[in-house]
Image 1 (cartoon, rainbow, N blue to C red):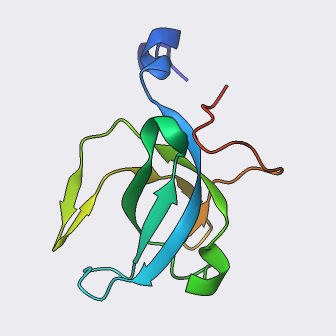
Image 2: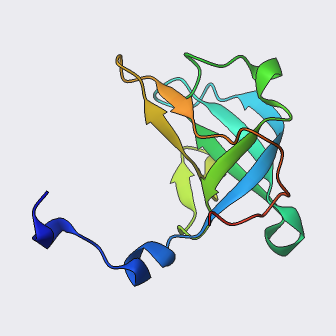
Length: 115
Protein backbone atom coordinates (compact mmCIF):
# COMPACT_ATOMS: atom_id res chain seq x y z
CA UNK A 1 0.00 0.00 0.00
CA UNK A 2 1.37 3.38 -0.96
CA UNK A 3 1.69 5.97 1.80
CA UNK A 4 -0.48 8.44 -0.16
CA UNK A 5 -3.49 6.22 0.58
CA UNK A 6 -2.94 6.12 4.36
CA UNK A 7 -5.34 8.00 6.60
CA UNK A 8 -4.52 9.57 9.93
CA UNK A 9 -5.87 8.39 13.27
CA UNK A 10 -7.95 11.58 13.38
CA UNK A 11 -9.50 10.68 9.98
CA UNK A 12 -10.50 7.26 11.31
CA UNK A 13 -11.80 8.68 14.61
CA UNK A 14 -14.27 10.86 12.68
CA UNK A 15 -16.15 7.70 11.60
CA UNK A 16 -18.56 6.98 14.45
CA UNK A 17 -18.92 3.17 14.55
CA UNK A 18 -21.36 1.85 17.16
CA UNK A 19 -23.01 -1.42 18.08
CA UNK A 20 -26.77 -1.65 17.88
CA UNK A 21 -29.39 -4.37 18.20
CA UNK A 22 -31.86 -5.00 15.39
CA UNK A 23 -35.38 -4.61 16.82
CA UNK A 24 -37.38 -4.95 13.59
CA UNK A 25 -36.71 -6.29 10.11
CA UNK A 26 -39.18 -5.86 7.25
CA UNK A 27 -39.35 -6.57 3.55
CA UNK A 28 -38.48 -3.59 1.34
CA UNK A 29 -40.28 -4.30 -1.95
CA UNK A 30 -39.72 -0.75 -3.29
CA UNK A 31 -35.92 -1.15 -3.27
CA UNK A 32 -34.26 -1.61 -6.68
CA UNK A 33 -32.05 -4.41 -5.31
CA UNK A 34 -33.40 -6.92 -2.77
CA UNK A 35 -33.16 -5.35 0.69
CA UNK A 36 -34.67 -5.22 4.15
CA UNK A 37 -35.71 -2.24 6.25
CA UNK A 38 -34.18 -2.44 9.73
CA UNK A 39 -34.89 -0.64 12.99
CA UNK A 40 -31.76 -0.62 15.17
CA UNK A 41 -31.46 0.32 18.87
CA UNK A 42 -28.21 2.24 19.31
CA UNK A 43 -28.60 2.94 23.02
CA UNK A 44 -29.82 5.97 24.99
CA UNK A 45 -27.38 8.49 23.47
CA UNK A 46 -28.33 7.82 19.82
CA UNK A 47 -31.69 6.06 20.10
CA UNK A 48 -33.57 4.11 17.45
CA UNK A 49 -32.44 4.50 13.84
CA UNK A 50 -33.60 3.03 10.53
CA UNK A 51 -31.47 1.50 7.81
CA UNK A 52 -31.89 -0.26 4.49
CA UNK A 53 -29.64 -3.29 4.07
CA UNK A 54 -29.03 -5.51 1.03
CA UNK A 55 -28.60 -8.65 3.12
CA UNK A 56 -31.41 -10.86 1.80
CA UNK A 57 -29.08 -13.57 0.47
CA UNK A 58 -27.67 -14.64 3.86
CA UNK A 59 -30.44 -13.61 6.28
CA UNK A 60 -34.13 -14.30 6.82
CA UNK A 61 -36.23 -11.61 8.52
CA UNK A 62 -36.89 -13.72 11.61
CA UNK A 63 -33.14 -14.36 12.10
CA UNK A 64 -32.23 -10.66 12.25
CA UNK A 65 -34.23 -9.51 15.27
CA UNK A 66 -31.98 -9.48 18.35
CA UNK A 67 -28.73 -9.59 16.34
CA UNK A 68 -26.11 -6.99 17.25
CA UNK A 69 -24.48 -5.22 14.30
CA UNK A 70 -21.78 -2.60 13.75
CA UNK A 71 -23.17 0.66 12.32
CA UNK A 72 -21.82 3.97 11.04
CA UNK A 73 -24.01 6.53 12.78
CA UNK A 74 -22.62 9.85 11.52
CA UNK A 75 -23.47 9.72 7.81
CA UNK A 76 -26.26 12.05 6.69
CA UNK A 77 -29.62 10.32 6.07
CA UNK A 78 -29.96 8.79 2.60
CA UNK A 79 -33.25 8.57 0.72
CA UNK A 80 -33.89 5.17 -0.83
CA UNK A 81 -37.21 5.41 -2.65
CA UNK A 82 -39.86 6.15 -0.02
CA UNK A 83 -37.51 5.23 2.85
CA UNK A 84 -34.97 7.33 4.75
CA UNK A 85 -31.90 5.35 5.83
CA UNK A 86 -30.37 7.06 8.87
CA UNK A 87 -27.37 4.77 9.53
CA UNK A 88 -25.15 2.38 7.61
CA UNK A 89 -25.26 -1.19 8.90
CA UNK A 90 -21.83 -2.54 7.98
CA UNK A 91 -20.94 -5.80 6.33
CA UNK A 92 -18.42 -7.50 4.10
CA UNK A 93 -19.05 -9.00 0.66
CA UNK A 94 -18.58 -12.75 0.33
CA UNK A 95 -17.03 -14.38 -2.75
CA UNK A 96 -20.30 -13.80 -4.68
CA UNK A 97 -20.69 -10.16 -3.64
CA UNK A 98 -23.45 -10.90 -1.11
CA UNK A 99 -23.19 -9.02 2.18
CA UNK A 100 -22.36 -10.71 5.49
CA UNK A 101 -23.08 -8.49 8.50
CA UNK A 102 -20.34 -7.18 10.78
CA UNK A 103 -21.23 -8.46 14.25
CA UNK A 104 -19.66 -9.09 17.67
CA UNK A 105 -18.82 -12.41 19.36
CA UNK A 106 -20.38 -11.52 22.72
CA UNK A 107 -23.16 -9.13 23.78
CA UNK A 108 -22.10 -5.53 24.37
CA UNK A 109 -24.17 -2.47 25.37
CA UNK A 110 -26.13 -0.81 22.57
CA UNK A 111 -24.34 2.36 21.51
CA UNK A 112 -20.88 1.04 22.46
CA UNK A 113 -18.29 2.64 20.19
CA UNK A 114 -15.70 0.66 18.25
CA UNK A 115 -12.51 0.82 20.32
